[in-house]
Image (cartoon, rainbow, N blue to C red; front, side):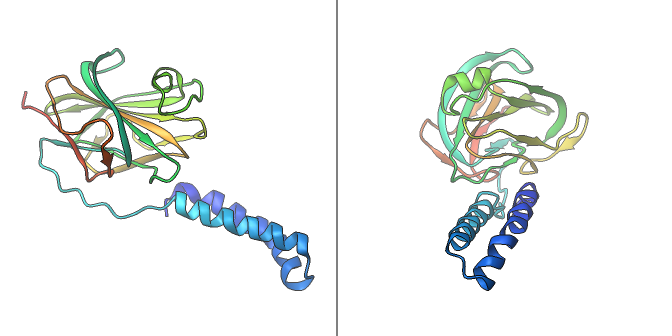
Length: 214
C-alpha cells in the first residue's frame, strides 16, 4: 500500500472504534450499519492506494508510461513552459486504476511548476489547460522531456516528491494523484510514438515511445 494512504486509513480505523464498540457490546442496529459503512470505506482506501510491484524492462532509448490508464489522445503541439514543439501523450486514470506515478525516463530534474486551477473532468481537454497541475521537466541525453500530473473532478490533491537538480531514473516512483485524474507526457517532436488512442497502459512497464540520439 502507498504511504500516501496511511493517514486516511488510520483515521478510518480510529473512527471505527466507537461504532465497533456498540456493535460488539451494545448490539446497536444503527451502529452496526455505520460500522459496516466504515469497514467498506477502509477496503476502498486499501484498494485505491494499492502499490503493486512493477518491473521496468525497457531499452535505454525507450520511454515508459508514468501512470496506469487509457490513452485519450496523441497530438503534436507547442508546450510553452519547457519542451517547446513536441508530441503530447495524454493518459486518463479512472477511479479503479493504480494512481501511483513513475518517472518515464532517465534524466535530471530541470523544471518543476505547480499551477492552481479548476477541477474539470480529467478526460476533457479543458482539464489539460485549466486544472490544478504539477509539471516536471527533465534534461536527458536525448533532449527535454516533461510530464504533468493533472487533477480531475474528484482528484483534489497531487503529491510530487521530486526536487530540482536531482538525477532520476526510469521507473522511479515519484508521486500520486488522489482519485480519478490525468497524466500527460511531452516528448521531442521527432520521438517515435508507440501507442495509440484507446490503448491501456501499465505504469513503468508499458513502453510509449522511443527517442533519437542527439
